[in-house]
Length: 365
Image (tube, rainbow, N blue to C red; front, side, top):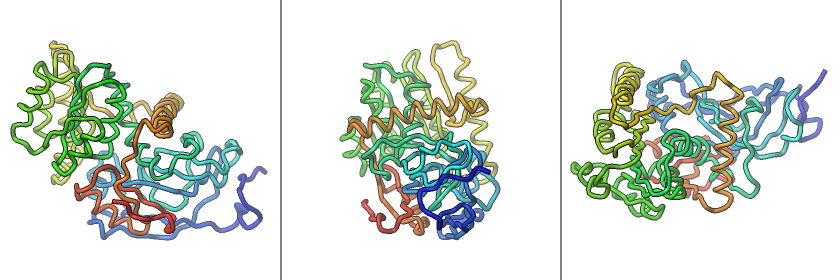
């Protein structure tokens, strides 16, 4: 009978009782309603790996899940956490023993707000040597999303002009940098407090609350922009479409405008999808898409290959110093409530990172 490969001696035998510290979302609660628990951790099964989590993060998805408004979140209670960086401590039968001791990244959708996790080894992507775990964490779901928005959906080319809504956020700061690296001129909306940071990344900052924002974009791009990346949705999506140049592309990837709305969590997404489909069908040469990171996951091998290829590109840029991680704060896992409040405050640039190891959890706002 094959047993998991371990990094330590007899005390780490898979038969020994293992536990993990995890943050549980029990229902629709405010941030103080999060529960820090200790629970049993199973040994990795066939094709699985166990990781000691070094960094996980707070994304918009968790903010929506707290409200019960993420499109396809699991039933309460559950452990949130969309992505992680960790070191493999054991693998199950059929998984590569060489993974043990290596730092890996993974997109999990849920379950990453924990000190240790067990996930499929096929979902792991190597983190380059020398890369800080918290910095790498900011570029997993955010970097993967930004790369695919830019290169797989909009297919931005050198010399084009793009508009990034929320250029001070987790996805936005990465998207701005990747667009600049692709040779595009970048306009980015953000709160005034983030304008210097957005400018430093290579974009022209614009106040997202400015009632004359469309006119200001037109002044900078008289024939329209070649791509708009819109995570807001709601009524403002109309302006995003109107600002497109001939043959331009609108990519919507969120519904921030309806974050605090009451009623169905799915209806705003469905209405947005319908509007985008209608625009996409118009014979004016402009395209409109809704980006979903999980699209095509039924073809598991193809999905994993895309994730590995694209995330490797992003992490390599980070290693080489061509892409800067935007760590808004490093906060201990057991203070997840504080981390969530900070992420939802709109007062930080970049991504709030949860660090399970208390000794490494020094806040760096």
